[in-house]
Image 1: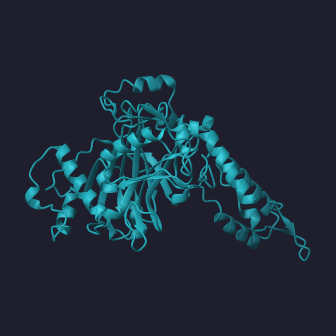
Image 2 (image 1 turned 180 degrees about the vertical axis):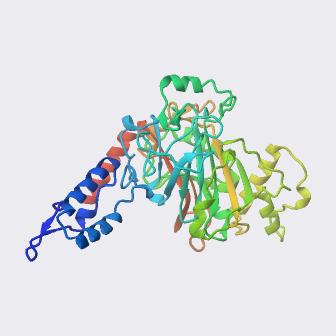
Image 3 (image 1 turned 90 degrees about the vertical axis):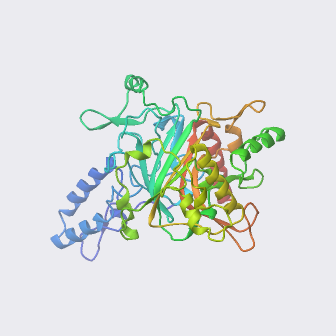
Length: 458
């Protein structure tokens, strides 16, 4: 095992203290930062001025406490287990994390009405491994949003889970604090409660820009992917019935339970509850895309499917690209209809381009896209799938084999002569990917992680 070098070396030729490269790799946690700086200052006083300047310049490069994923963890979580035991989770029994395998960077956590990132120390949250979830009781403008970036997409995510504990809120003096039990009770009388009279238990909205041009909408998917085989499944008859129910909600569902990597995937644009398109207001170079992430309270409000003739409808992209009439959508069918009817039309149209692998339309890098998702099948209170009878409630604990649920979207590319749903060479290019852990998964996750490390050593 490699050990850390001592705090200094003695040069035989000059008889003076010399700083090594390892000495300048300082811990980045706030608790040790001040101590390390003072120690470096005291040790450097015996050095000539030129040597002091060189040491300080080198150390400057290592003190990036404001960098991506830098506080309080250095490496974030790993793929196999949560970053900390459930007793430390600020919103126990669940915790939201960026998926390590996706390479997604968390740029900041803030209120929807603000452009300033929150100061996280003391809240239990962290840009590297522990992200906040809203519970629907938030006051207007105070929903917590997460700015993120992948190779394919940059945007903002806002998640709500019914009955989850309150994260933190602004106090009267502007400082952030964790809410006490009494304050949580007061907030629960909020007349603007998002989940009131709604069957859904989960809602998420993602708004952002595609960074790569000409990504076919038919190649983008969302759903669940797993890195290990499933655990204990219910009887086959129940599994078959459950998949049939989900398939009715998502006709183009790719369901694979067997094998090393189970998955449930469906087309992104037809699976989303609502999709909006707006012109990109900031057309800076790609290196400045983060500048578009600004205060916008509309991400936390109710989002409705626009009329097909509206420029904010993604159906406009389909109409303009379907010159050969392959989909059968035209501007003539764009009269006023109900929200439910407009949603059904979008879902049918984009299911068809997915099943036929039609490469048009593509996402426009000069447009801003908003995707809203919600579901009612998962009960996070007891972490189970809540189907109608005769299937009823089915615990997720045993099925997941110590693996988290995901909130994700990706571009799914297949090798030559491959089609959707068939086995073969496949690659997922992540748009976004979050892990949603429940405390009941923790022990199984630790066991799996230990087994993986043992097999690696062997």
